[in-house]
Length: 267
Picture 1 (tube, rainbow, N blue to C red):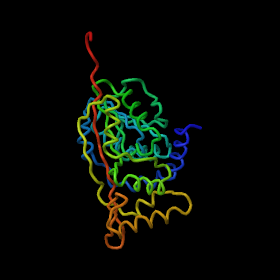
Picture 2 (picture 1 turned 90 degrees about the horizontal axis):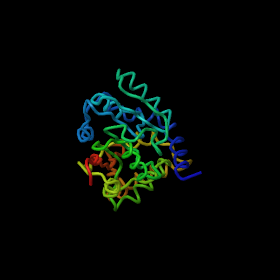
Picture 3 (picture 1 turned 120 degrees about the vertical axis):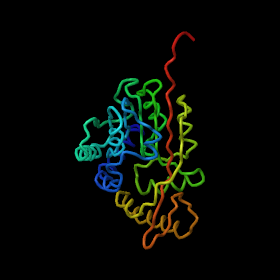
Picture 4 (picture 1 turned 180 degrees about the vertical axis):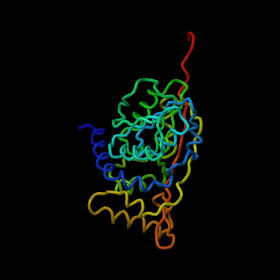
């Protein structure tokens, strides 16, 4: 079994369990039609959009409010099932859901004018290959956008170790410069980039969506607690006590690229 297949098995195991609690954790964004990432992506009424590793489909549905049509693809059927429920509740018609692998993406070359992925690249065994597939299915002159976890280089090692303990399907979150470099390797033109932190989330709410290996949950809780007590931010999550709970802030970066337009005429 290849590393990609082994990682897919971990993702299926984790996200089949996580589908319902993750949908509840992200319920605060229900019905929203805008966000800083959406503003950067800037979908138009003529865009045909692909949301890669769409999860429960909140971004998919946000895009569908503004685009011509959106396809959401995810490996985990339980996640897609949650997306269909949200779609029905929102009364949105211009969405297609696909359960399937992203390596390769099961779509023709240049099929979409906008290709996006959010909070997924840190679960991929080969993020460079995934981005290359996103570029392939994007039309010349179209846009590709990624929004993902991006720890700073000095905390990336500790960040990835604790996240992998919390969620065994975590592979590696890339620091911002490494994520940007993937686009350069694919020959993309960078249109906009922004690093930010997700507003504070209660640690226990995150752990409620987590299914670590036996015995690891308390280890993870202890690591966060020790970091909050120290004030050092060794994990890169700004762990801090607020009243009787620990709050954490995930570091994120979004990047929007453009695929070069098709060449015309002789070289």
